[in-house]
Length: 235
Image (cartoon, rainbow, N blue to C red; front, side, top):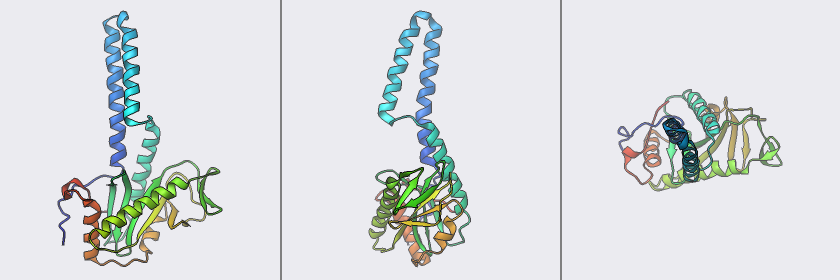
């Protein structure tokens, strides 16, 4: 049995928190430097403004468009889901901010009823189904379904690396608005409101014993890298 006791815990929304810091700290340094340069003399003001603009452009090129507000909302949504998952009964392991090759999965739950990949969407307004598609404010959200499916498939591949053939269920949780008809099933992805993840998880049809749960957790976190570079936390 793989020892998972030495894995370093990650917090809910840790990646988003780190990204916010990476984006805000350079901007704070930029403005501080501009103020200092401007204080040296008025003649330095134009140059400091030009330098600040160039550095800001570099930050955008390196990190992508700045949208701290969305990151903050996403962080709050992930923390809300983490709080809800604390209501799972004994025997379930909850992993937060699980790193994958392409990014991260907000939450992963492993327990006697199976493995669940959970994505969080903290959007204003509700989600609903129309003609078999997930909708938000009149627009289809096919990318959300693809994202959830991709996360579940990647987890399944990690389980296959230890010869554990287990279905991985994809779940999307809306924290910013209701889900009409929750739970919805759209292309094998379950879409629920904030009050429904626990009931969906505990009613899962896959059966795993305690040893399989432990092996699955280790395989998911390891991801081909040393155990200590991954994360585990319990509800």
